[in-house]
Length: 253
Image 1 (cartoon, rainbow, N blue to C red):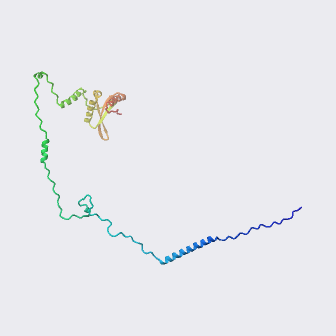
Image 2 (tube, one colour):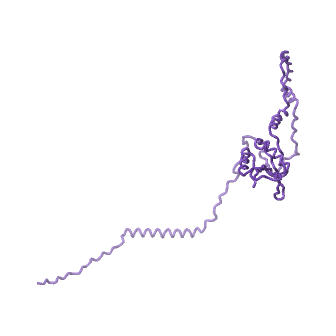
Image 3 (cartoon, one colour):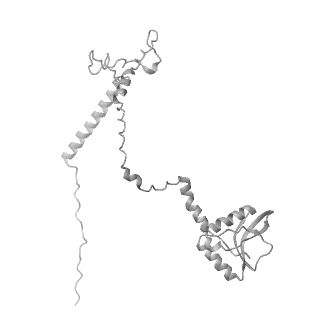
């Protein structure tokens, strides 16, 4: 069995109501527009009447001095305080010299010096002579002069030293030698030897030095040596003994 067709009418939307402007709002808009037009008109009228304001006002100080110095300022009064030192102006009137200083009175100084001078010392009282018994004692020998007292130890030391043998010109040398110095003259070599013997007499007192001349860069030197050592060890040991006593030496090649 078939159902009969049902006619469904189409959807019909209701017509929207036309919305109008609120009367109160319309009244306020009209009033505001009228006020704006009135203000613009008033501004145009005012600008037409008053075309310019003129020059700006000038503020001037009041007439009369700003400050007035008091008649009696008080305080310390300094003479010449208002004078212009660097202005070049000079005081009127001829120049005058300053008064001369008074001459010093030296009489008072002489009196004070005489009063402060000490009295001369009293003469010494002579001592009484010692009893005659003291003269019987033996008098000590007079002390030697200072020069003799100073040279006496040196003379005694020289008497203990062995005789110094002056160096001689060497004609030949042993296989090994010990050189003590190189001097520029024979006299200086002799003097150096005497100084070394006086310095270490226990080592050099019995030695006989030789002088070996030589030329270095055109200049003659005199070499002070001790020759006759059998080998290099003996010469080196002797040189070490001298070095331990502060004497410089070396083994020449």
